Amino acid sequence: MIEIALFEPEIPPNTGNIIRLTVCSGTGLHIVGQPSFSLEDSMLRRAGLDYYALSRLTSHNDFDSFVEFLSQRDGQSRDEILARICLFTRFATNSYAEHRFRDDQIILFGKETTGLPPAILDRFAHRKEQLLRIPVHQNCRSLNLANSVSIVLYEGLRQLGFPGLDRSYVADTDTDVP
Image (cartoon, rainbow, N blue to C red; front, side, top):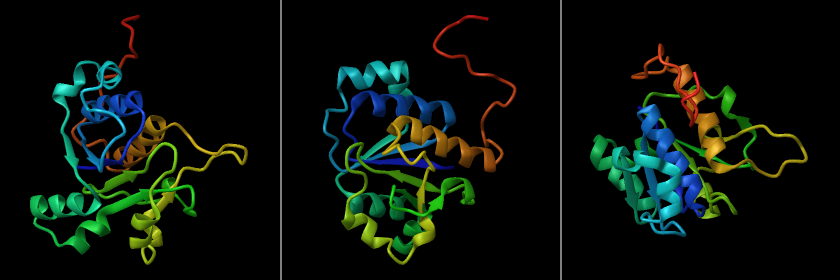
């Protein structure tokens, strides 16, 4: 199943919304590196509602620990793990909409203010096809992180036929209006 990874997230409500998104989509979530807030933050929990306890959230000290965890968990080499990771950066030329998502894809997003650091991007210099972006208007510098994760995750799930999701159920918004 597709998994989301956030590198050192900075805004608790974004991470809370992503926690809710991953629970509702049946995907795992990884926090890579140190977030700028406590995972016990009240704004994070408020945005995540009661989904926090249902989340498949795993924290990792750094990128290398993240890759090592996946390698041990999935019984794959570090190179096989790196081949599964798509990195989102405004410096990419490939659109997420043209990418063919795998069912074991790991989608990595950077910090809200600075994106992914050069140290991580440099590791993928020979893997340009794994560097993706969301097209935006020329006057737009960036999209909200939670919105970006939603856009990309649901495109991947759509391509895979929404595995494990109830396609007959239409999710309500935060209201119970019929």
